[in-house]
Length: 549
Image (tube, rainbow, N blue to C red):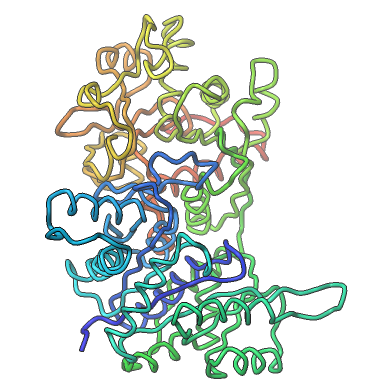
């Protein structure tokens, strides 16, 4: 008998129904009942990882502590569970085929014909189980990307079928998420798409144990009974997932639907205690009843797809609740900012965040945003490239280094204040070759970040190739921009700050990756706190002063 229970979450009818949120919500409820849980994502694309994908294609690339570039759903898993994931929590078709082909080249299959079944499916099953080997989990939840019926998902579905047979009935189950659309013309909810989706799943040899129906209105008992009857599912295993104003309400909805109880019974697990969600409910209460309202400008070049900055958006929600504040974020396309309009476009905000990114496009607008924040004493947070833009702006307009730039944008610049990291100069391949994962940073005790984190040494996640050029550090510090966070091993400048500003911080790392509901990232919390103060001072027509008075 398996010591770990396995739950597989599939989707039907349409993509983007929220399999990741359902998986995270169920995991949260099981965790609250005292079980150790992890979640993994199986992605059907052939890329080895999403690191080389354009954010417009796949949204944000999320980075784990151990340096894996993964699907953005892993961010949801961490934000809900308050536990780090790893490279084993994200599996792609590219990884699977790469591993199988490498084994074939080494002769590990002893001359056999390598096929989807059993070689590809065996590799998938190995990776599903691998996540539970390093640390024993009571429950592993596996989300299958895409929609049932997709050609590229078939090997994963077949692997699930095999695992259900191998593990036995009480050691695994399948949750199928579908859509029940409302047709305004006839004034009724339609279950036929769900029936067809389940039929497709049945054709692969899998009978779902639980159906979760995504809907924009309440489901009647008749609807639930009909779905149960035609899809061969127990009546109490037909679960409603109605649209809500925030994803963080979904665990509460699933609690009311008794999803956790149904799952535990089907897996022969003990209902050992009531789920303790006090901190979660406190967060929701603050989120839904803010005392302050502020506006933040997020300046980036992928703003047409908000998922490109998913972790940043969620970090604002966490930090806002921590400050009893509703953070209203305006996404500003950096390419639309120029010298004639940037002051007008940015003057209404209580804080400015310049987002990470790669490449030359949109860089001038980001530099102008950093300039406006510095000269207008508006709270500023620059992340990765956002920090680098603040450094370039300061070099040009405060130090007088005309044409100062990053060598990513201008290899011939006279003042390369941002330069390629030494270890990156011999790197030719793009996939998984950046500085990735968690690194330590030592904070200056007189700095804003130290007061935010309340400790001397922190660890945050990175994803970059370029760095602050230490050759110019003394010039910057003499002019008022300090290096207040240093990597103890490489002496890289990880954090810059302008002490005479109300709140001006740039970080080379990505603080948004570590922010969770229960533990918001301290830097975001302090940034929002500064923006609330700025907003209050603006309302009272009091000129903001620096943190040093």
